[in-house]
Image (cartoon, rainbow, N blue to C red; front, side, top):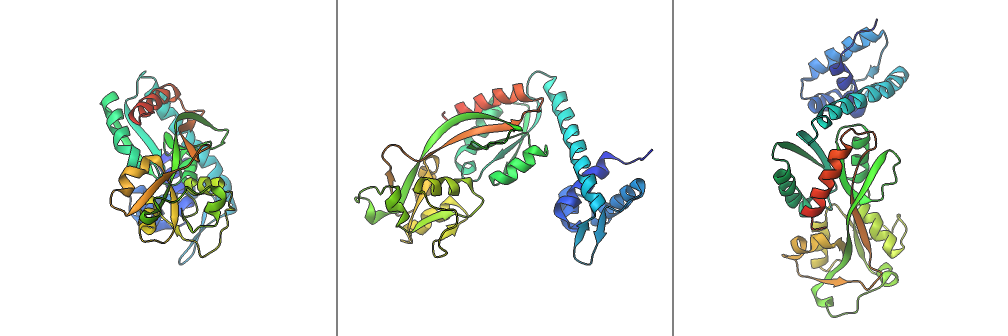
Length: 296
């Protein structure tokens, strides 16, 4: 009988993900030597090599690739068992691991956290702010319980619950305040500043303008809505931001805000979680709290 521990599986998963002993050890909050020892013991128990160790690089073996699939299933099952234990208490207690996208977090998170802590005083909430593709991966792997994203994500493994919709607004230099609001065709002729690739908000803005994802190199991409607005203030171009960001991002920028005529560009904000999650009943209640906190 092969004997290995759940801890070793977690260490293996971290190393397989990071392909670097130092980064994997940091993610696991242990020393690099301790991680290396646990991986060696796991390989000894399995009787097979999981990783090829190079001077600067760790490469997973073909057996390691196959083992990674089983390890993922094991860890996901453990997460579901933990969720089942929490769900058995009828109300949400203990821990909630919430993911949220960057174009939402600064504007909604304070109200959401206040609403959740008032509704669930004993709840320990941890927040993960990152891009949608990363959230989807971490949700599938059981590293977070639920995520707030723009819908649809069109992943059959996830439940999608719509919370509210919001319009996009045009941000342009202050001197353009009295000009007519451009339509999508006119926007394509302007210097449109966008978030960098990976942000779903970028894709939504391009879709409204009917522009391809690959754009001329001279048009600028930024990493945050704050940077976009400040670039507009400097006269570099124009941009789109979600309605929820207007108050915070324009209060210290010399820009003007214009709202498009109907049909306006917009996005649907929603909450997603795994269909197999035993916390489904509790997460439905959480979605109602979040909708109310966000004013939806």
